[in-house]
Image 1 (cartoon, one colour):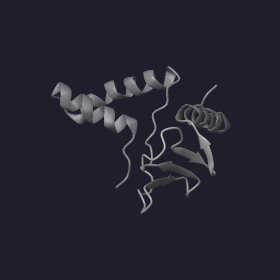
Image 2: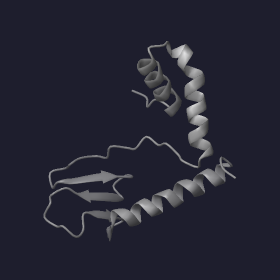
Image 3: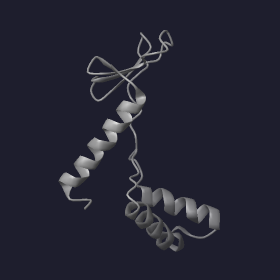
Image 4: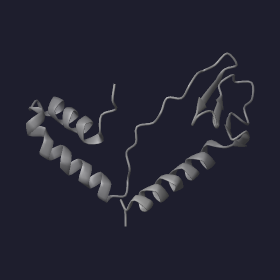
Length: 109
C-alpha cells in the first residue's frame, strides 16, 4: 500500500464532510495544501518502526534509532546511534534536518 499524499487525504476528507464528489472537493483541497505549505508547515507520513522486538525495543532508520518500550527506565527511552536523547532534542534535530533537506532541494526560500 502506498502512502496517500496530503492533497489526497484532504480531498477525501473534504468530500466526505461536505457530501460532495472528490472532483468537486479537489479545488478546496489544493487551496488547503497551498495554505499549509505557504505557512511554513510540512506534513509528513511517519514510519512505524520495526518491533517491538523480543527485548521490547522499537527500531527506526535501519536500527540507528531505538525506543525502549520496556518501561524499566523513566529517564531514558530514546537512543540515537547508541546515545541517549530526549524526545524534544530529537524533534528539534529532525525539524532542522527536514528544513535543510528542503532547502537543498530548493523547495523553500
